[in-house]
Image (spheres, helix red, strand yellow):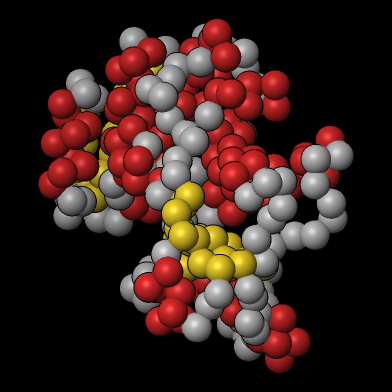
Length: 253
């Protein structure tokens, strides 16, 4: 992803990198037949180091934390972000302090330990893990790299937007379906599209950005459907439902 260093906050020579980014974009003909689509693609972010798009954000965040003099990094996570922080902190020679719910997937826990991170399992939810980081970070000297607590994870994840445009010949798809927790990748891609328009690389067209979440944990999806500024309740307006009908070119992450 550091081929896009001119639009990132650090130079490529400064990057803490494990060769993340430039993941393949593959047309899925059988699936598009099932959906009745004509131009359906999957961008396989599982090819990143530590097997998820989280590698992009943590590469940039750890790069900037190191550049700005941080020594110890902390994060609450239910899985993939923890693995990515552990990997990039190890590459940077920095301490990683990770707080995970006790029922986190064992593979993520083992991966964090293998990279030498300090891992604490918490009997609670990820929000409880976040509270621990918030309460202790000043005393412990941790830099908090939680979702949306610092700007650089967005900067790393925005490279998905640059790649998508470049791989599609500097045009954008009609719709992007994106599985998310806090939605940082969606924010990052939207920022990338705005930057590319300002650079004159693309026009003003924007994809329909569709957040996909599990039914058991769907705060972003629910708030969007309810037309709410925060996670509360009301119904999605009919005009929004109509706007989401029948996109032609889709990209699924």
